[in-house]
Amino acid sequence: MSRLRPEYQLKLQETFEDQRDLVKISILSRITNTLDKTTFPVVDGVIYKILHQLHRHRRDEFITEQKPAIVVDKHKRRKHNNGRVDS
Image (cartoon, rainbow, N blue to C red; front, side, top):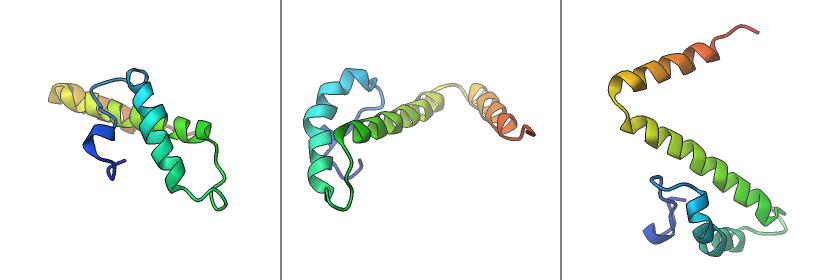
């Protein structure tokens, strides 16, 4: 994603659904043209889902960083404790 020109990159300030046309028209076509179809036989739907998940996680981190430090600290502590729960 970072290799794309700035006008073709997803904006973290906007939702993925708001940028659907950008994804379908420019980003998805550029990625499929770059991939070798014989080596990586993936369909557009799979690439679309990967882009959606990537944007969601990056946007979550972006939104979290915009919050006050005490809220970010609570969030990180909660995530850390959830990862340490014994099964």
